[in-house]
Image (cartoon, rainbow, N blue to C red; front, side):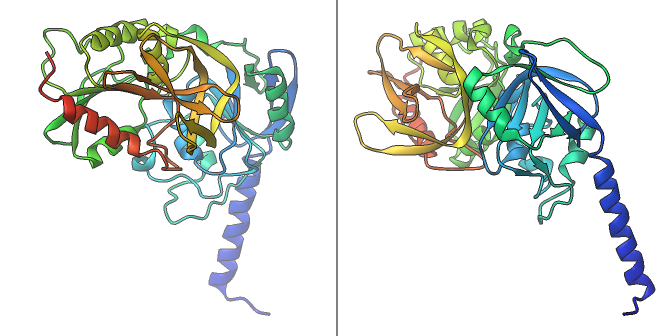
Length: 379
């Protein structure tokens, strides 16, 4: 069969592109765990060393959202789903922040030739642009089972240059990822002050879509101070990375808001911070919850919601005057709490989850309903 010149050139270009993809994944790197366990793999990201905490996520989709979720700051993320990169990277407007926050990425099979109408680039190109190392390690199942058995541990991705291990929980990661300035989104008669501890963009989108004006403030912003230059009707405390006890300023400020009986909703890290502010306590889970299928049981009912989660810490001791609202059906850990008589509640999971499921979006409606009921009563 004879091929015309254009067809021949197209085929040659495809061969060259395939060769470039292969070349990008031929350099070897090693994932080293703090106990000495090693996993060799091929690089498809930035080829520089990084240290952090190795964790795993069982979601089948959503790697762009996970990588740009500030809750993954300092963590080397292992995706258990075996095919990653197949739908490329969407436009930045679809991300959860304006950059990648995960320290590194581990996958089983990297696809460097994505196919999706919204793809703007392949995953490897994005990782290299943002200087995020990534390895293709064939047996991510063994790595995941190892983490489940021994617990989340410190790790590092290295090439020729070795670096020391680093514990991200030793830092105030919230201060690193929070907005440095006050920002405003949307318009409406109801104003929600969003304490940005590493907030996913979809929290703002979810509130704005419901007609709220959202004022985003830094993690240490005192909303109860006399010189706050704007009025607000409720407070939402966002998700974020690391040990919640490192964000003492947020805890102190939330304590003041609770005393003033301001309507408050907490999400993920915000759930833990609210519990600490009210007198409860938190602890670190063995390997955390990171998936899109965590089952949460609603108190005083037989209803179970499927939720998206990403956290290492959990609420252990509930504060006085609060009751358990949701419970994890897998391990019995607390997934939500609510005040017995004030319009204050929080959940460990993500009601704004992207990708889904969207089963618990109604929590934003409930929060705004509570805000409307108390509007005008704030001192």
